[in-house]
Length: 143
Image (tube, helix red, strand yellow):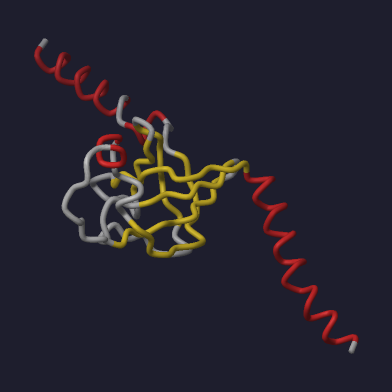
């Protein structure tokens, strides 16, 4: 009887793991730059309260993550949250953040979502930017 109970407990634990129930999505990191951390993580009192002592400005990584349907711009909480470019990662939503798992890591790393856009719209914007970048080259070649 104990063995049956342990077997059921084990199967329930395996079935409820995030990877097993398919809540992870897959995406590719295509862009990264370092930005200001303080803008993303300040609260109401910090912005509108009385002046406080000057804070040190820390740089945080900002990534563009492309999934099948949505493109995310995500920001790390500190400068040591690094993801390799052109890396396929697993991610999921968790409490208004993106929980990211790279290369089957044991732990997830949480990122703040700065911006989201539908993939088709992002592709259209990228084509428009490419056309604008090529336009000066065409005009110079005609001269």
